[in-house]
Image 1 (cartoon, rainbow, N blue to C red):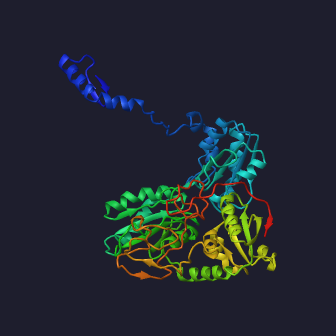
Image 2: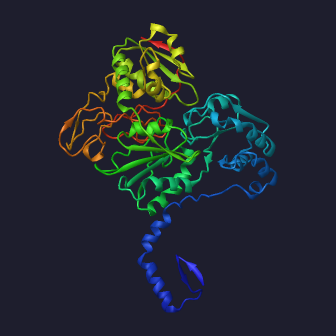
Image 3: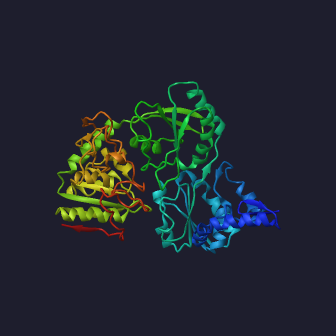
Length: 483
């Protein structure tokens, strides 16, 4: 017997069977011919790492020195260095993983042909800090970035880059039991949102079907280009349109801290939130002062509106600063006849900004929005995010100034510029207009494909018809003054 076209046919079919097969082919010959002209789909091998690397006893013995529940994907690193013939390899780690950097450097030096392994020692806050520029300055052939996902695409880096997520294995059964203990046989919550940092993405996916067996409706949201369930400190998916009013919804966030969680809470006010710490196996109730944060940012924006001399900080820590956003702001200020100064700075601090004294009335920082949100009150002069700058420059209305028309044909939310069909989340069913700070969310979309024009995503989707087209990315600008 021989398998052909998904069925079993005899090697020597009878005339009747052959006629039947011929008729079937004749009936669909046109479709088959059309399909044959289409390009064949790309096939990807799930595991290209050869057994000679996977089963190398000496290599595996060296890997055993690393924590077994941390997946540094050393076999992949060795394979990539070997296949790329890289001689100079740069390694970058967040501070929490630097303690393992020397072991990994020794492994790569021993089991590959690399002659130099550099460890980049500058602080690495997140995926936006991938430092391909420094690695390139060291003439590195390859940069291996540990601990974060591929936020800056590999086709946008100046040298070849390999991202290693460093997923952490946790006790999924303990997580499941903790959730069952608190939410099973309870009418409080029917819908559970699961999210966390990239290290625990596999655990989140593993617990989803088990919770669904218990009758829960599970949502693992995604803000592309991030992975499903992944949240950054500046980028989180908005889920407000996924549930109707009155539905019982709770967020379970898997992480050992609340920095990333706060981004989700800012983007999704009103959702009951719990954080599961996988290292101690405890569930914590988490809250966020939305009103206090928005009032503080409102004061900074209103104070900045009266500025005569502006300063724009382009962050140079890794890829935090995006020249495209700088070009956009400079164009706006030029059109408005404003005076501004561009400053390049690796780490933004109140002490360093204060050195400019009264030469600058207000600052816009193109680095990390959480600098302004979390520590903005520590700066003597307003320190705005690019989104807040849009408001201060008069291109957007402040969230405290906007009204949204409930159940109207067109929503007046100037942030998302959506129509009723696009469901921006500011419209509801009462048909009334409201003017509340909680009604229009503060966006956390700084690397989301469908985020606002102020964001730094390297793979943005084409702008909607109701939105302006994004500016193309140009080269970085040195310190300069314009008037």
